[in-house]
Every structure is written in structure tokens, then in C-alpha cells.
Image (cartoon, rainbow, N blue to C red; front, side, top):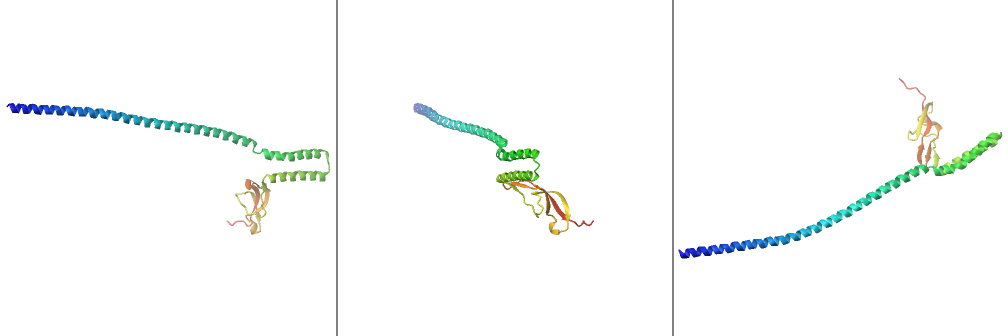
Length: 201
């Protein structure tokens, strides 16, 4: 009976010691985890700060880019407006000499009755005008015996022609067409030939 009691006491003491050791180990592990977790939190905070700084930097670059684009857009709009206002300045300035000649010719018409001289003066003014416009890139459309082309011709009317080769071709020009630096700026108004044989019903 005494031995059984002693064994029981001994086992109880060992179990108590084991429980105490386990409790101590648990506290040590918990303390260790707490210290380790603090390090992770500190690392995460550093990453968050770095990411936040990167976001702020990108945001600043974006805002600066938007401001630069807005300034570029306003400047382009202003330049476009100024260009529209002065687009024909160069041509108009070059034509002022023709306007001066026309003024002189008009005054001469009021006082002179010399028809050949008046005709010569008008011809000089006209030739000067053509020369200036040609230098600016203006070119008249050639339409002699040309096939009718709706891209560059505007048919005012059609007239019957006996020659089959002239059918569908430009017969006469009402208003010439013009190119400016090889770009069409006015279609020619023309008369087009058609068959003189009435179509059978």
C-alpha cells in the first residue's frame, strides 16, 4: 500500500513537472513568435512606405504630363487660329502690285481714248497677275480633247457630235479648272460631246 502510494506521488510529481515544462516552453515559443512577428511588421511597413513613395512619384509625373499636354493643346489651338487669320497674307501681299496697276489703269480709262494703249495696259496687268499666281503654284488644267473625268470636270451640258471619237470628251470649257501645287482647287466646268443619234425606244 505504501509503495503504491509512493509510486502515485512520484508519477504525479513527474506529470506536474512535465506540465510545468510544457507551459514554460509554450511561453518561450510565444515570446519568440512575438519578437519574430515584430520584425515582419517592420519589414512590411518599409515595403509599404517604398510603394507609397513610388505611387506618389508616378502620380506627380502623371500630373506634370497632363499639365504639359494641356499647355501644348492651348498653344496649338492659338497657332492654328493665327495661321487661319494670316494664311493668305503672302499671296495677298504679292497681289498688291497688280491692284496698284489696276488702279492706274482705271484712272487712265477715265481720261484716255487711245484704245490700243488701254488694251496694252490691261494685257500687261493680266500677264503680271498670271505670272505672280504661277509662281505661287497655280496651274491651269489642260483639257484639250480630254475624256470627261467626273473627278476633275463638272459637266454643264452635253451637245450632240457626229464624230464618235468626240463622244464622251470635253468639247468646250466654260470655266477652267485649277491646281495649286498639284492639288485640285477648282473643277473645270465643261461641255461634253454625246452621240447625235437618238436612242431607239
